[in-house]
Image (cartoon, rainbow, N blue to C red):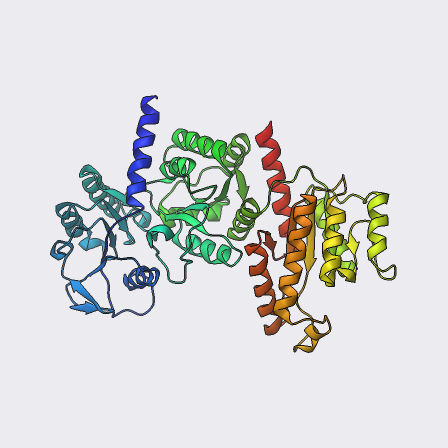
Length: 488
């Protein structure tokens, strides 16, 4: 093993311990300011909600907060403290740093902002001093100016409402807001995370170290990253190379335009760099670059729930000819194909689908799919066609108001949804062809509830679910390109 590999292995081991602290102290918890930001109370409530076993509130102004004893300083906590979250003003940070060193903590997360990202030389120097003081004492630092850690296995969270379950997706984000949005957005589509790290100014723990960690983390199968800028281009390239060689890496780059670059400088004081260079790097290393948090969630869903298609052939199945035509256009625009089904496949479909109002060439447009047994037959027959590599099944639960719309299908909503998913599973298992589900937008409150319920049943059965046909086509195409590049 080389010296560099030894160092990376040591760093990985040290981060692993930090992701599993035995106790957390939050300095600067306050009840006086409303809302989440800046008061530390949000961190406290989030940790309590997930059931973190040993959380301590620190603020000399209070005796008790949320039923917990409140300590005047970190040093007043009787038991050991592994991890400290700083929500104190920047001017108080040096005192907190000395307390952390004296207490023997292992890591500090600075939610505290107002350092290098302000552009003020004095505050930049202060950041350098306090971070250097901590790292010199062997204490790792997240931030400043970040939301910190979400590790469900350890019951760590930085916002309320995060899922308590762990999953195989790791996410690093220079932005705390984007980190929260990704977690919330992806969670309703079945994505669960191994670890999420918001790292802000990256004064110590940075994107390269985190990529190297996730590349080796056995609990992470897919890596997502929001990156505004990098400190060491050569080191970042090697870290991205290692990560992309090990598992899928989905990258969202902040600062793609001149305006975005200015925003990056005021956000985390990062050098955004050239998008063209970043694009070229991603192509060379087979990292998948995306343009929004929504697209990043789409790719996380695709890599999590869809095996890579063997080729570009997509069959579109649904009720409503206009939707199917639109889907065919979007599939073509994405660089995929919507081939005419073989004559034998069309003949088999014709035997179970009514002739009137039905098309079986591809797209397949038929109302027979609303009968669960015929849905299974239709999907299985199509999945067995030699020129079809993935099935895009689009449907809607906007059937009008009231339960009479469900009664028209001869089943109550829950039973009907369960039957549909069961038939989809049977078809997937019989044909071996991936099935992607597109749930068209609901039109009223009732259909929103039905759509959300069906979406949950789909991902629980292992189906990737997308809100629009273009987003599904884009995700399929990018996974296919990733798989082909990986195999060459």
